[in-house]
Length: 291
Image (cartoon, rainbow, N blue to C red):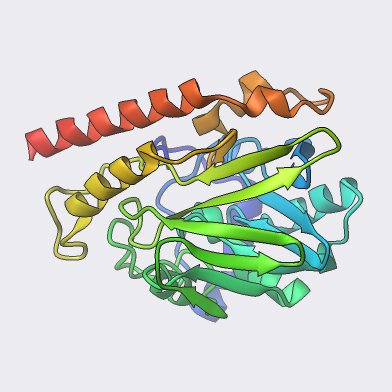
């Protein structure tokens, strides 16, 4: 989550106008215009599709027994995601599982709405489940003032690194990468087209919030240790294609433009992944040295 303040988009203001009474929601502390801008959905590789906004990434995985949606964007993004899924020729009602790379309002803001519309089962790591259930109020960086998104309970909790999520012919390995939130996760799985199989990593990159204090905080005593673990764990992942929670993190707009033909090869970018991970680790080390 980048910390550049922008004016709240109309869709978000409208959402909070109608929902603030029911759950006494407060506006998110940070909003960027690119988080709610429309972006043409497209096929990334095999049965993996991009259905998010210009910068907030949402991914649809199509299986033989219904579909999986990873991340739901800001509150009020459900209608845009639905439009994208249907534009690709899929049924919104076929979403059976909802996953999240982490439970900040800009990635799970529409989770409750999409669950209500589709009946999909929400699956999150046990350490992020409290944030989902209280609308982000217990978040170690942004919490304490109330809910920033509609509260919703998870249907299944993940407890261990490399837990699996299965649906139809898909098996997703969940990698626990704590730090950005306590239950932040990346997802590793195979997709295939008529030419080959690709190992895909949906990476929760360990960006560091300005509010994070090292080596620990009263609300997150092990935050320093968790970041150190995650930097080590993410260095050893084997994959062909990687994407992330934010389009800007994996250079989407340099690799793909609206109307481009299907070309999974543009997302094969080990160098880009390694470079970003190195930059984030240096920022982590610099912040530790300054605390």
